Length: 278
Image (tube, rainbow, N blue to C red; front, side, top):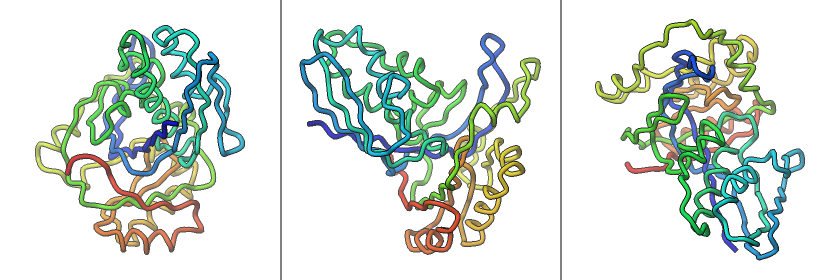
């Protein structure tokens, strides 16, 4: 049996630059940072020709709408005839939390099953077809992303910090959040600036998430959690993706843990570390 870890991510800053004229997709820039908070995927390969998915949580789809099975279906033309598998998902990363759990699952599946393919597929192209965050998870680490999240460049930032994730008991719809930003196709695309910030030397004060200006008024709990993290001594606090997770950056495990204890009433709390080269 194979056991895969599918790590989550946070967004360090997220700017929405405009929309692509060709298809209406939103253009962005962000730093994707992989963290050691993960779903676990168990795979038992067989020769029965079917791929069956189970999950430890109710409410998680286990049909072809799940990104795990979508990833397998994208690989079908390359897999040996008759190959099948029993797949069990241990779901730890909340759905709709801005942590990329489903995308990470898909990338883990693409990497694992590509090793069983008779012809090597273009994993990056398959990943782009599955979702905007999936290409990042093929390699993980720390990546500066532009385009629709598919133009990726590894970057180095200090990783000597600890993350306190606060995950409220609700999720935020990404389509709703984009709609609320009201970015039309006629808007001029903004210039990127995170890369220029990085050339000046890394500083948390450079980063902000554009979604916060529409999400915090609609979900005041998000703003309250962010304020509470900063009051606890976080170096930085912000929304990940389009939410609903708010994270705080702390200079030590002890400070992150102490803050997490005080914020448990706001939702599920998890203390974790960034992954990648230091």
